[in-house]
Length: 285
Image 1 (spheres, rainbow, N blue to C red):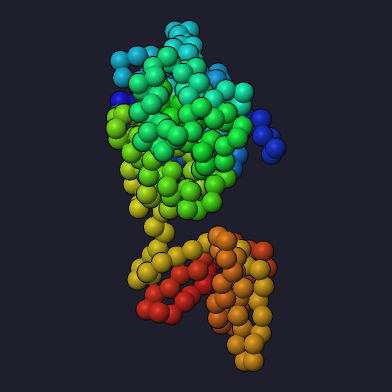
Image 2 (image 1 turned 45 degrees about the vertical axis):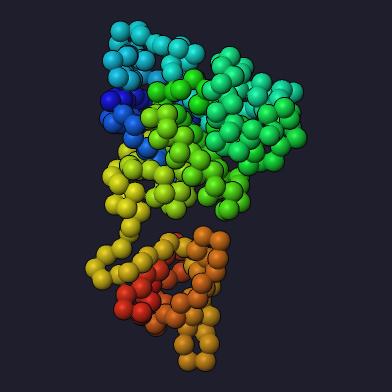
């Protein structure tokens, strides 16, 4: 069990914010940490890694990593963690294999990790010559070199194209299971959260506002609605005798017929929810 009870005052673009997190995580869980930008997700990962200070207690199994009342603070290098950064953080003047061996001189483990992630043939290449997807795999392998108790990932796949993201998601899940690690990953991608995590935690303005299974967190429908999406209302266009709302959802634009009553409640730039039930789309604030 990992018990986290920490506090830290953050200074953001909109002023001070108190990060207060009280969580218990079961060993071998895969936890997706999600929520609006600036809510403290990355800071929480850095606190767990020992890269930022906070007040409170962090217990991992029978070890105390932090207890500010007892002035206990375990140094980052003594916390058995793996950290996968969004920007890879590789040594560009080293080969793929040497990046792994820098963490731990275990060629057998390095070879195994490179083999299962499809990097074995690239082990002698300098990381500066690799593609984004390849670099991310090297970063993931390097994080696993210490067989970490806790694997932390900060939006590791956000810069990759959809097909590469799916491939690396499968590799992440495979490594998570093989090494029986506990994983906490920051993500804003619903499909990624659903595919990888068995638990999702929503952070907003430094507070945990929701937690549960990915399905409980992500399935935001009510009544007989079959599906529901949030998007930005871009325009309302009159076409003959009807009105059509133009809405940006994810990476696409959708058009939904709206009634005169709905138009009265809508304004351009508003975030709206589009849902459907019995093949009849409805729109609401």
